Image (cartoon, rainbow, N blue to C red; front, side, top):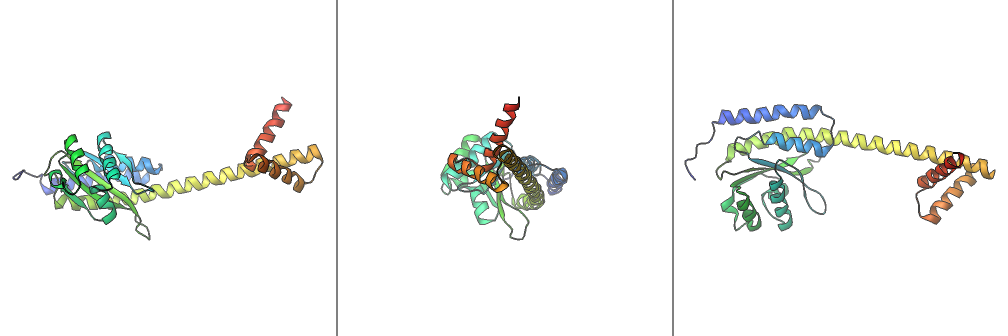
Length: 247
């Protein structure tokens, strides 16, 4: 399909600039990582005029996962690649380089992907590695842009998406740090709650049995081992039992 008129480069640059500007709201947001990835994918769909759908592949063990997508069918197309162990999104993730293809040209290299893409009417794909900018340049995965037009993407679009993913990587870093902070706080809160209930249970046993604090704690530990139940749960059950007796 030669001779197809591409949008003016300045128009395409404006689209990407607007998409990057939209990321500012994500920078300021305090949201879980997966929710931020969904917003990054939705914003990326505006970065290139011919983008019809966007997905984000995240490297996980034992297999990658679709962390965000703008179209359910595209999520299925990514999963076809994971199951086959090959495809543009995996190539971009592993090589850490952009992969830009027209679907008809991929039939021999990635037959499973090519067949699934044709069934969905997808004509082109542009996958760009998505990196988190930290000391180790840890690879998160890839951002995958799909179009129904075979000639949708060119080297200029590839450069624009590389620019976009730099800004997106910063937003993802912020989200990861916020989520890690929230997880740490939640763990501390659970630890403090557990300690408080264990101390209360020890006090109750000391009052009932006239034992020392160490002896009360040994009773709790022994019950925990016999029933294969966490110490905190044993303490909680004891306190619940005492509370029900008072009612």
